[in-house]
Length: 315
Image (cartoon, rainbow, N blue to C red; front, side, top):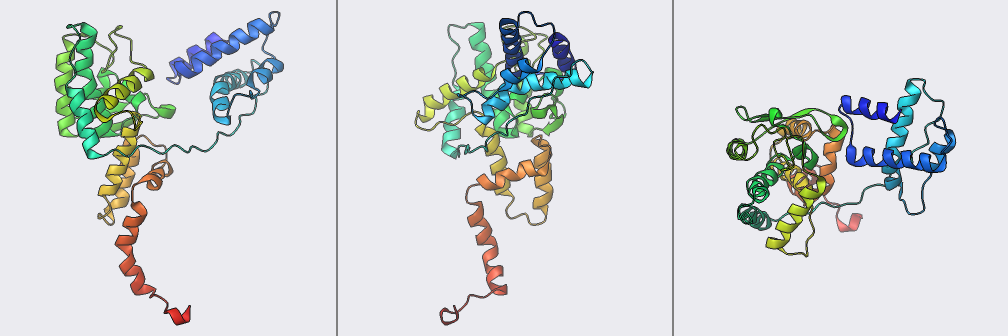
């Protein structure tokens, strides 16, 4: 049944191997070790596995049990089990504050990306030299999720129109991104150069391991951290995903003077970033630097004209 479930999720394009794959295997091993004579899935198997552990937060518990809860839902929908789906704990609210990049920091970062030297001319090292400057510039200039860039197929990049078709995303929502003309030209140059080293590749940023291999999350973060520390030191600790936050914040800051056009541009930003609802994009209001000060600066004069200050003797 697990094999059928995995095949179904992969066929529907909604399988996350690093998360789902690992935990469904651990659940399978747990059942084999503790219920060797079990002929069918039981409520006890599910409940014991899905019970919150002392070392878990609500969020880590939610992530660990997601595959099993989805598996049971799959079985129940097909009348293959009567086991009830264990309840999911509500994840704690996120408190992460994105890193606020300085312009000088970004200039130094991309300069060191461009300065990568292949080690002894090795093929993997040459591929890294070509790939790194383009990969991180794509994140910076489009607000693309790191996972979207990693799983981006070559056939989904239209280098003539400069449009990227995102089919593998958070929540598996398809959406489109229009690249800046300079980014489109950079992508085209990279595509031509890398094609000599990786002909007939499947992924736009393909691992040197083969035509059906894409890079891991660790590859993205490890390369970002190495290059960042090399040029900006180890005190600050941004992650590659912060480039997405920077993209959103920079756009919003640039629209402060746009009046009625602000709302339209905000809608476009939401769609381009692959958000399911405008509410997800409004989150960036809370992290835009000096947004509250900017709003006061733009509106205080008009507000004071409507609601004058109260004299001290009338307070």
